[in-house]
Image (cartoon, rainbow, N blue to C red; front, top):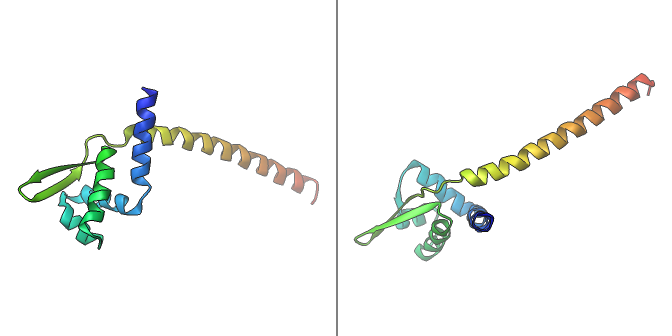
Length: 117
């Protein structure tokens, strides 16, 4: 399971690392779109958009369906729940560390004002 999740996380985070792919996901949250429509929206070639869609499909974030000559894209079913949980663990860790640092700084300020400095 760890191997599977790690591979899945690698694909998800790699897909999300690109601004265009994040933009595609945002657009698909509003409505399904053809690859041609997406390419036009992002002012890019059809070939370039197909590559982006391929990365998103491989990560399970987008699915496509071809009807006739039109390939329609929609959000995938896998979602990002596991990835969000992984990120949340690190967010809580950093929040705890920053809270501890804040306590140290406040203690130092209090000591400094008590000593008349």
